[in-house]
Length: 455
Image 1 (cartoon, rainbow, N blue to C red):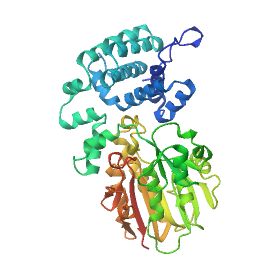
Image 2: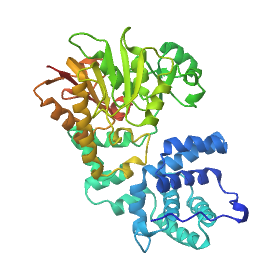
Image 3: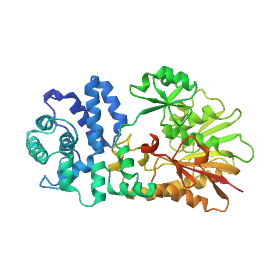
Image 4: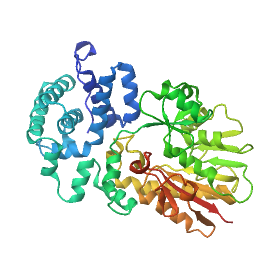
């Protein structure tokens, strides 16, 4: 449904409203109307509007919580209006979700949650819509909190788990398949709902220096990782100068895998074939042995430019705009190749709460086709005896194990076990492959496979 233009007062000015709730609504509006990413937009709005620490924290809780719980909130709201939710004014639906989240999940008094949402609706949409929002939210409040609504809505055990953890059922099934049983399933799903720590990577300074500068603590897995308890990482001097960067510790391990892999023959040329925006390439440039040339490629020019910025100041590097499926370099040009393939991004649901509802099962097959073609190109780019690290930020079996298994079925490829290369990281083996999990490792759910060309 096309989103109508916002109503405004004469002169284009809104009435004075609760700053935290208005900012949270603006995030929801941008996500639903422009497919914005909350993790990119919200920090910008918080800086621009100069909300104090308490209001900024409440805004974050409201925006991320509402986005994360969208499916559960819609299940509640769907039975309380006289038409399909998709036929509502999209602004009204966002406002209903915002109010319902406060009633179901936050310790906001019912009258405050209802009244502030009605005020927002009157200012943003109009008086007529505010009556609908008032009536629906009062019905939500009459039943009670999330537990009371789960008792009313839940059918089988899988549906209850999906509603309780704010995941679509297809993701619950995918996590069950990836984990192998139900022992850790609920813990894994709940970990997707927890606010992630900020992780830094020390590129051009010692980790101990970054710890001292940032006030963080050393990461448990990557020798370059520092974990922050809070604060703005952009204010850390090393981050501002480019000597350090924000990078999930799991992403760091995925890059480090390339250098740890045993190699037959020379080791002089490395390739990061889908390098944008440049996080892994930046770490590879910092940790490669002397004399190794790094080529970083991305098919999107704007992403290649981000890679150039990430590699600024590094010597013996080359950044190309190139498609890994049809590479411009000669076959067998590289000793080591990193393929961080485009994927569903389901391994980073903690950081992008809206992705769980934006993605659908229909997104997976075309991505698998792309991943398969890119991996074929990567294997063609590495010389016999060289290695390819295949990485995705997803645990979904179709875009992880299935893609790697298909490549391993070639008669010129062998699989190298990943977990023995990280003896300090427990619980990462997924057969011969590697899998990180938020609930086990405090990282994004990164998948890693290591393949060697044999001839």
